[in-house]
Each structure stands twice: as C-alpha cells, then as structure tokens.
Image (cartoon, rainbow, N blue to C red; front, side, top):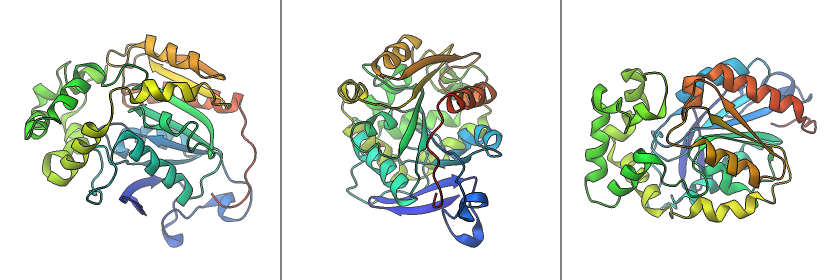
Length: 303
C-alpha cells in the first residue's frame, strides 16, 4: 500500500504502475518515459471494504490500464483521520477529488461500488473525470440502503451500538446472514476475507470513530439532492448493476441511468452488490467494452 497526505489525514491506496524507486505515485512505462499515458482507472470501494475487494479486477486490467484503488475513510481504512475532519459524504467526496488532484490523474475512468461517493463530484469537482461508472451503489432515495445500511446508520446514533453491531462480523454465521454481509454477495464470502476487510473497525476505536462520523454526518437526502447535478454530466456514464442485487435494487440503477444524459444501464449476471467479488470477470468485460466505445483524449506525460 502507498500513502498520501491529504487535508484531513493520510489515506492509503494501491497503484498498479507504482515504482518504488520513483516514490509514491511514480509511474512506469510510457507515462514515466514522457510518452502517451495509459488509460487510468480509479476504483473506489464502499463502506468497510479495503483495496483487496478490487484486487481481482485490478489484476485483470493492469496489463492494459493504470489502476488505482484509494481507500477512503469510510471504514475500510487503517489510518484514522485528523480529529475534527469533515467526514460527511460530501467531505469524503472532497478527499477523493483531492486525491485525483494531488496525483495529477487526468481523463480518469472513475468506478464506484457500494457507496455513492463518486456521484457527489459531479457538477462540483469533476474536471478530471472522463467517464463515470456507478456499480451497484447508493443512489437517489435508496440511502441508507437495505437492512444493512439502516442498521449501521441507526447504530451510529446510539453510544456503543456501532461497536456492538460490528462485533457480529467476528462470527462466520452472523456475518454470513442475509441481513448482514451475506446479503451483499451471491457467493459465500470466506470469513478470513471478512476479517481482513473489517479488521480495522474491529480493533481500532479511531477507525470506528471515523465511520461513525461519516454515518452520522451524511444526510438521508444526500443522493436525492445530488441527482439534479447528474443531469448536467456531459460525459459517458455506465450504470452497472448486479443482476441479483437485493440491497441496491436494479430499479434504482435504471432510474439512475435515466438521469445521466449519456448514461447506459447494464447488468452483470451472477452478482449482487459486491460485483468485484461475485463476478470480477463480468465486471472487467463491461469496463473494457465501455472504455473502448468511448475513447478519451490522449494525455501525454504526467499521470
């Protein structure tokens, strides 16, 4: 994992083009040599999920793309944010924009799963986005989403309740229930992977504090209000939904695609919310088709 200091604290990220000899964010290949940069994809995990959720996708795409996975401070992170940091959904979206700026990432294909953070850049700080991909994520009035989201948001308002709820992830049976993580994936999630994702939340009070701050500060109508700005997004957008998603109903995805002037809707078979876990191959194929159909301007040098 690489790390970068932002205005509210340090976040970790992975970068398939990272070169240890060039320092964090250093590129390799054509971009490092001053030639045309490869297409850049930024894959954003959701609540409680680290970069490893996207690992199969990043591994499959790295021969042809530069792939970065920033771990935003919404539960999957290992480094707590500064005290008093704005960790509302809009504050976290600001950190994502700052991440793109600091690494000078241009003509980015921004891909968001589970959380709805990427939507909040549209019309506010979206100059670096060439294509937007929203993959089974919070949107419109589906916030907080499902039993899982509602339980987390309720727990964040009761002292000690969030810690108690998260302790259930220590149990393979409880974590695998439909009302918990088991409802977010079609395939059973290995418990060692659950512990890897949620380890920071289970062991570090400061990480739980950050997640609690995010849940408590994010308004219920956040994505309803953001929907109006989506109508002005003048670049290609793909709304990619798990065909068997229960927490993020496909009807929400279809409505979301209808708001985007250049939006298209597509479903990934054999997948629920966690498409990168359930069907990474189907997700990669959809991304490749989308990018090939919508070429971005060539960016030379830099990132």
